[in-house]
Length: 406
Ligand SMILES: *Cc1c(COP(=O)(O)O)cnc(C)c1O
Image 1 (spheres, rainbow, N blue to C red):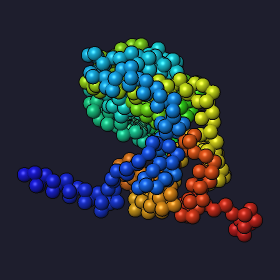
Image 2 (cartoon, protein in one colour):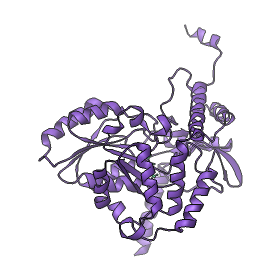
Image 3 (cartoon, helix red, strand yellow):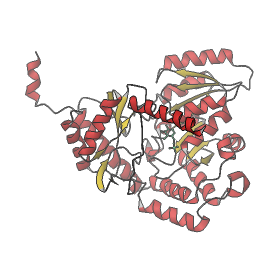
């Protein structure tokens, strides 16, 4: 019996290999930073979400150590039984103050946040409306919810309005909810959602908005408070989601919002209710990160990050406006071509793995560059040179050379 079980798994894996979609783990023998060690060699890393270099920051390490010393290695139970250690309360307090909301709640990851929160907020009688390119955790949360699901074309406000109008007509009863959910920075394209316009539309049609600021927190807006804050609409975003695992350099997910929203999630979000509380070390590190963000050294990290983004963009896309986020995709298309490009870059000592289906659509494979404050200008130059040598970035032509095109 188990022979045929293993056989069927093996056949699926073979099929993945045949489509250039097979994946395996890459063992890294160092902390996460601008450089990591793989197979005994130091390589330049442009694939991490550690935007501010916090993952290996001594202040966060120290905070993790002291949280472990004070609260132990594990929380021992779910928050609602006896695992609600004071470090989690402190972290939630700091997050709410940072995002300027009444209250916050933390989960063990961003993924489990979306998987628990979306089904809590939208059930069979409700309608969920999500952007086509929303993160997988939003898509899966929506599928789990049992709500009527509608997907609007990426960043297409007309399509969103059409669906909101339809939802308003279809909404059954005053308690039926219509919830719009989207990323604020799209994780594989690095573009921004038109947050201000989405807020206007959801207000017009009486819907609620869940905004996932996973790649914006720490990176965009004053003190890194995210896109909603930068656009001046955060008070109108009912459900503000994010992760503690990217710019904040630790692990966990969070929701910031009103007192009643958080009370509701504590009672209803199944990934919160039925899960052991996060490890104290992760909460301690995240708390240190939230504090560090709001200091001058935090500001300097963000300034450094944006300098690196601009240096790259000026060298490779001199005619384009400034990139909106720390993620710049080099779109390649075919999976095998993207993998070949990634292999060539690795031979030059640069870690930039190909992003393939199902993370992006089929034949939309890409190299997704993510910048960090831990990179130096020289690191960016090294990347630009390597991309030129592999034909992935345009070589700067002398100005006179383009005059022949007539
Ligand atoms: C990474 C990511 C998540 C998941 O967060 P984790 O803490 O890594 O589980 C959720 N949403 C978006 C948009 C993300 O990019």
